Amino acid sequence: MRDVAELLATVPTGLWIGGEQSPGVDTFAVHDPATGAVLAEVADATAADGARALDAAVAAQAGWAAAPARDRSEILRRAWELILERRDDFALLMTLEMGKPLAESQGEVTYGAEFLRWFAEEAVRVNGRYTHSPSGNGRILVTKGPVGPALAITPWNFPLAMGTRKIAPAFAAGCTMVVKPAAETPLTMLALGQVFADAGLPPGVLSILPTSHAARLTDPMFADHRLRKVTFTGSTAVGRILLAQSANRVLRTSMELGGNAPFVVFADADLDAAIAGAMAAKMRNNGEACTAANRFHVDNAVRTAFTARLTERMRSLRIGPGHLDDVQVGPLITAEQRDSVADLVRDAVAKGARVTTGGGYAPGPGWFYEPTVLDNVPADARILREEIFGPVAAIAGFDGEEAGIAAANDTEFGLAAYIYTADLGRALRVAEALETGMVGVNRGIISDVAAPFGGVKESGLGREAGTEGIEEYLETKYIALP
Ligand code: ADP
Image 1 (cartoon, helix red, strand yellow):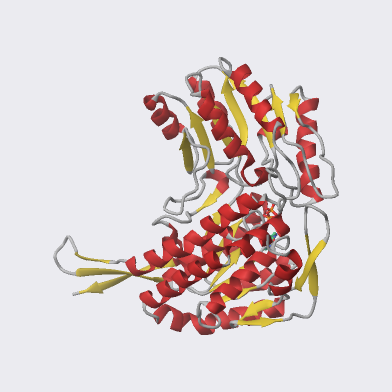
Image 2 (tube, protein in one colour):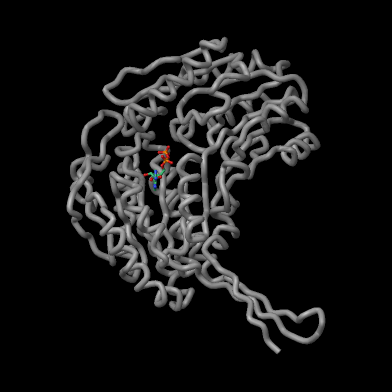
């Protein structure tokens, strides 16, 4: 394995502004959640740094938009290659600052890099249309162009992919971008800045500003008339604040917000497949994913068997620092996150849920929580309403298809849902009835670079990836012709 100290010594820790590293006036510490130890001190961006980055983005915008799509595409493709060349460094860095097992970080390198390749391919396929007015007295030309300078605010759970899923379509469309990564995991994004510098990205097109004071940095940017777009992945609570700020200046917004994904197992489901899917949907990324199965609604005809088998699988998982061989569950991101998972479990148990495995902190020094299964979780338990973001499976029973659909839809969120059934008719009926942006049918992992990712209801606005993703960064212009 790559030597940790050696890797950390090579990671950029300054701000990326105008294509260069800049030290910033202050620094803040990045911690390893497996030990609590300080990994690095990184530059702490201020409002003045935000203004400089926006100046650079605005200065670069016209040239970047006018650059041949093929040139933008080639830079994205080169960046994809460079990430893959540096795959082991990126994987270890993510495990160190975020905590997920190394195998999962390797998976994120592939997935996160793939957005660069996908949008390198999309960059050269932005089309308009040409048509005639129905009245016969005019022609209609419709063109697409970049929205303009964009601000991306990203979370800590997928330090690479949540950045590339925004940066790649923005660059493909011809937008410049200022990225504010999560304070918990800035190192991966700073390493990505090096990739783009090495790939020949023109100065100013990308700035990366870690900060310990998010609002201090971004509030003035929201007030600056030169910013045209905000793209955010994070909690619904913060999304609401950013939407309100965006309203002042009528910014284009893309919001990937919280989830509360139901995992619905019908009586006719293949239980082997359902258990495998449940483990993937629940435990991927330590359970810290907005698409994570948050609540298991299981037909009472199969609930006892499902619960017993899931319990057995969850109990067998190995917990530990993510960089160690064979570890399947790493630490949670912070002590606060671990405590909030514990609170949800306590509330459910107080209301009558039964713990079949886990249910407590795992030995530290880091922020570990045991893989946990709760059965018989009552409808009023907070764990069925709130995003868990941890390795806890909450199981509730239902009787029959309609009750399963009703339980799944009983939430203000609408990001992902998973259903398990052997009946194609039922799969289609239920998938259509679910109020979510994404539905996995007999699949526990649904994210795909070629598919539109996003939610309905309070889970967000807009779509990332797929052929839809680039639209978020394009404006439509109508040119009327005689
Ligand atoms: P999480 O619960 O995953 O940490 P948050 O919604 O709190 O999600 O944070 C997601 C991102 O939003 C992070 O980069 C965080 O720094 C940023 N953020 C939080 N509050 C604000 C704010 N008021 N203005 C701008 N960015 C914010």
